Image 1: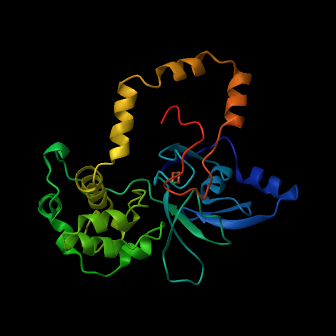
Image 2: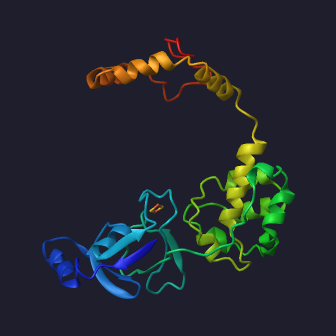
Image 3: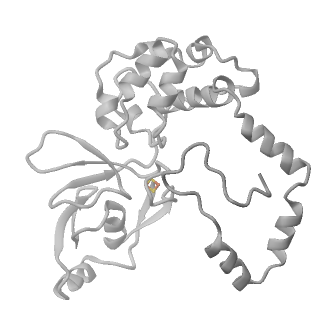
Length: 260
Ligand code: FES
């Protein structure tokens, strides 16, 4: 996340005034400077409240883009903690620092030419074998991923397991920032997931059938009808549609199977 301090908006005086209007404030330290911010704010909102402008890399605000990696420490605690600024709420007296970007090795490759073989990963990321199994990466992961286990799977050539273990990775890079071996785990995992998704998982037959039906223009008339429909008509169609039950089994079919 890239940030800059807004000199013109929320000064410390303005912050104090808000506190006097009955909002419960809590003290935090951003880049070493003390601010009082309303309780319950996320770190990201607290920074904006304190006058920081988020210039770039704070797109999703929903815990999925990985751009807001943050480290913090609480008083009396030796441990450096990690969090996503858009998810973690402020705690009294926490010392916060943003990690705007963490430079990590990212291999270049022509994906179409890669084979679904562990040697491809070893060749592109030989530093994989510098892992000393210290588990710092796992402790640093705000997504709760067993990062070290996924690294071990890759070392053993198990691309599928590495891909599955790292499925929730949002590429924030906090694992790499704590790694003794200088690994860029998140880039390695991305490669594993790409290989797994494109070259290992069997092709879904039903998807191929559906693509064929779309190419044969089977849905064109229906879609054209929707495009012509008025808003009220669309709302009615949506509300009256037969939705798939939450607990439906694999064999569930709608009553109207015209388009299946
Ligand atoms: S802003 Fe996207 S994960 Fe926080």
